[in-house]
Length: 97
Image 1: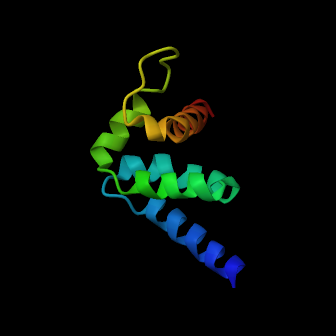
Image 2: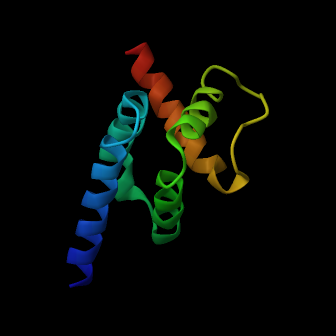
């Protein structure tokens, strides 16, 4: 039962990652979620779920400000720093490919 609940939660998070308010965030969060969301522990899943509740325009700024800006002051709430960094690194890697 617990495994099914986790599977359903992961599916829901992946779907929410691909069905954002703006296409740019679909293309940033969707692929990241497909590859990484299943590897997150319970606390990180909670944080990611909270991140998905944020405004897409804010999220876009927070993620893109981290791409190609090593050492720059990161934008966004500190609670999301690790996830936003991971998402930005993943997005940057996809841009280079």
